[in-house]
Length: 174
Image (tube, rainbow, N blue to C red):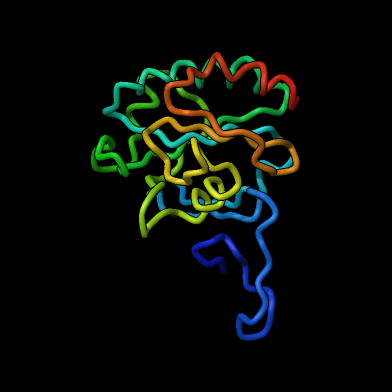
């Protein structure tokens, strides 16, 4: 069990806490509500993205899929997380939207990326790689976190950074 700072209880009665070391220690919800452990992606380079169906940046799904196609056979995977934190993800989990853009990468259930209900994965990502001026809040949809093969968060990209601009950092990690 983790607390809001991404610390895991490792001692009796919660007296000692240890920082979570990698993204692989998290479970995330699938669209059907069942949990999926991210250790399933151990050894892969990951691009974790908060997505939305009704956003001016939604066409980035095409660029994300292009990255998946270009690097997927080399151990790279995009992981999409629909979020209504900016009120641009309609009811449901946004399953039709990624399909409309040809996305074949995993799309998980809708999660909060800011506020009191922030999913623990996104608390961890934001703490590992804060944004501009050290702020942890995600400013908009399509913020991207690049994760290396060991599960460490190595870079954060602003929403307006198009997926094609992330190809070189991905290439370096592969």
